[in-house]
Structure formats: C-alpha cells, structure tokens
Image (cartoon, rainbow, N blue to C red; front, side):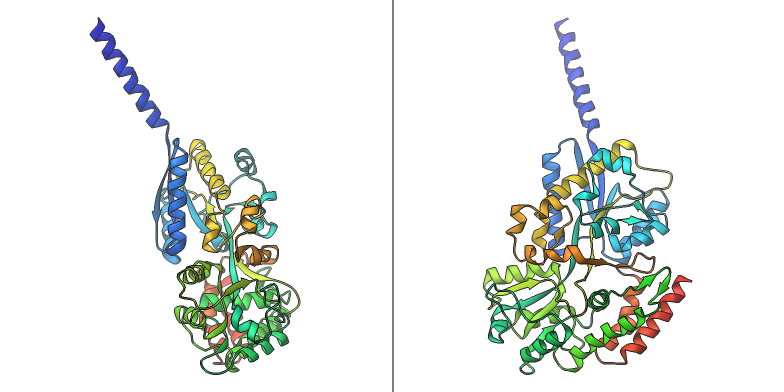
Length: 425
C-alpha cells in the first residue's frame, strides 16, 4: 500500500509539474535589430525572461529593411510568423494596406494598461492608420546635429552652457559653416551625402521647417509644397557646392570626418551616439563633443522622425489567441517600462514616464535633444513612404544627385513628384 501511495504521489507531482510547464506562455518574437541596437535588445529579452517565469520570449533576428518586411508579409498571408515583431512606424500604412498587421482594439489596449497619454501625441498618432491602432511605439529616433565643442568654441559659436549658438536661421547656419570651413582638411559639416536615407531625412526636415507637406490627400508636393521642397533641396545643395559639406561621402567616411576632427559638425541619426560615447571613453575621439536638435533654419522647429514599435501580425487562418495576445501586450508594456536601457543606444524612449524620469534627464546628450519629440515630423502616412520605400528610391535617384551639385534642385523635385504621383494613381 505504501508503495502504491508513493507512486501515486510521484505521478501527481509529475502531472503538476507538467501542467505548470504547459501553463507557461511562449511568445515568438521577430526583430531586425543589429549592431548596438541588437546587443541592447538581446539584453532586454534576457532580462524579461529571467523576471517573468510565466512567459518565455523566443526571439529571432532577421535582415533589416525590405527582406524583413517581405518575410513578415508572406508569412502572415499563410498563417505563419511571429506573435509580435518590431516594426517601423513609417512602414505601418503599407503593412495595413496589405493586411499584414492586426489592429489592437481600444478595449485590448485598455485592459493591458496602455494609454495614448503616456506617449508624445505625434508618436502615438503615427502608430495609427485611419484612426485605428496597429502598433505601440518603443522610441523616437531622428537625425541630430553632432558638434565638436573645441572647434565651435574657437570659432565663437559655443555658449557658456556648452551648447552651440548662432546656428538658427539659414543665413546664420551658412555663415557658421563658412567660418568653420578653413581648408580641405577642415570642413564645417559632414553628412552621408551618398546615402539616400540621410538625404531624405535632411530634406524632409527642411521641408517640414517651412510648414511644407510631402503628400496631401493623395497628391505629392501639391500647390506651394513643390516650391518649399525646391527651397529645401537648394539649401542642401548650397552646402556642398560651397565646399562646406564634402560631396559623395559614404556613410562610414562621413562619420570618420567628424570623429577625426576634420569636420566641426555632423548630421546623422541618434543611433550614432554610442559610437561617439565609446570613442570618447576610450580616449580615441580627441575632443569634447555634444549633440542637439537640428537647428531651425526656416520658419518653425521640425525634425524628421521615425519609431521602432511593436506590432502583431494578422496571420490568416491562425489568428492570435486572447491568451497569447495578453502575453504579447505584457511583453510590450514591460519593454516600454524598461526603455531607459534602450535609450543608451541614443534613442528617445517613447514612453513618457521614462523620458520624464530623473534618470533620463541626467542622460546626456539624449536629454538635450529629446526636445525634438515635441516637434517630430513622421514620414507621410502613405503606402509609398517609410523605410526602404519608393520615397527612399526617389531620394536616391533625384534628391541625392542634386544634393551633391549634379542637376538643378527644381528639376529633381519635379521628376520625383511625377514618379511618385504615378505610383499613387
């Protein structure tokens, strides 16, 4: 009898353990994050799995850009793919138009503790298409102006607070570039002028600073927006033709110009902040550096921005269960609440309780340029816009040559307008 009881108890214990194991929810995760972003996300994923024994994230990293979005679309169409994935908000309209993304209903968001009040208005709106929520923002990433404090101070362009002065207004900015360009080995500004992404971001920033709009009611650069676009591109072209910004500069070379002290300033994404931080810590930078929001060259503050976000695929015939969705939203909420670590990659956390925290306010230079979140201008909400989109191709084919002094800005704008309008018809 005693042996029977021991067996029964052992069986019961085994069944209890099995039930416990089965109760653990598995969340399949896809992302496109590499480099410093990838390292940081891996750390967050590991931390989540340690702190949440009832949910296990099984993560896979895929190739950034078109390959990622193509795989997501094709897998969702046949009922496969992840439970949750990273997604650029700029790609949201295209994802919705192809039926790739699942709506997150107001009731589902409310039950999970999400509120738009905890996000910058423009960022929360960018996560919507036609008023419906399809993603939860994780960060705001934008272009910023990196600067060499030593060179700006020497030129009388650095305030007592360590921030640049006298850069607002196109005329002032041009004067600063001229002053800071002292010869072939010392230019005022380096930009990846051979990179279509950077070209688009700078152009879109200057267009938005004029109150311009790229797409309105299905029309590309309609009305006076074409004139504003031409003005933006002409300003950029002036920088290169005057010799203040080197032409045809590849992305790595552009960074090298700044880090070697051969360019007094540098325009690039916030994602290069770790590059500068690491070089400074290792003593390889050779000067004090800082970073601020892009100066206001025209009528109003505005900066191109995008967001890494989290979205749920709309898997045909294999829709996510309520239990799985609850686990997914738990993961997303945890990521938002722990996004102070993500900020070490240069990003501005989307979750306001984090950016409003004392810890973030002490994080430099992020806290300085985080003001751009209030005037961030996201890509047009269109199926032809966003990362690796036809707009980026147009930037490569038309804007980039004009930026480098090859062709008239007005002709480039006209050609891009005609091509992109054709894609919308």
